[in-house]
Length: 250
Image (cartoon, helix red, strand yellow):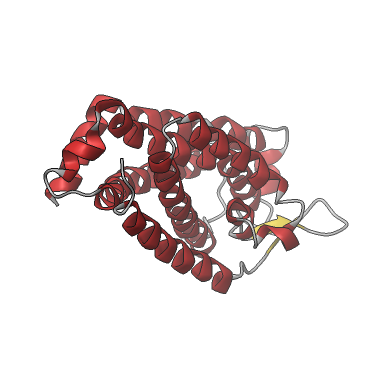
């Protein structure tokens, strides 16, 4: 716990929380486009339409682009400080090996990312209510999406912490996150491929999609066994890779 508190202390100097909120706020204008479009509120209040489906779909599109960049930037900032200050060696002298340090960074960033996602979601829902949507919020559908979004973010956050640890040039990690965001957007068009690409899970977890041959939306049952497999594989890979870092000379 002491190591995690130390990592959170570093965050204050790195301005991690303001950076997180700014990046997540970028999704709000994208969702607002669907809420303030002409006739949007009357359509969203139509009992024959999927309640809150369009805001959720736009929210998912925005997050697919923004969240891969977010986790890449956060992991890079939290890890680059060790490269630039000789932190890997200094921490090793106190018993915190590189692998242990990476795991501490992961848990410290989780404490930041999860509340930020909840705040982001709350702002989107509040925006819908302010614009005049009176249809009750589909809590199970939105809850599934938010929980799944957190899990996917955690998997990619772990990957980027490891990538930033093994690559001193942080352009590699941030560039990977940027490319991953565009891949995630494209995966909405090819759902059959999305399950085999980590960034594709931003599309996989979206519980609503366009109805074939119409402009309407239909709910879909996301393949939760695939998501569970991604999380288990990501956790096992992160533990194995970070333990392997302890045997690498720096």
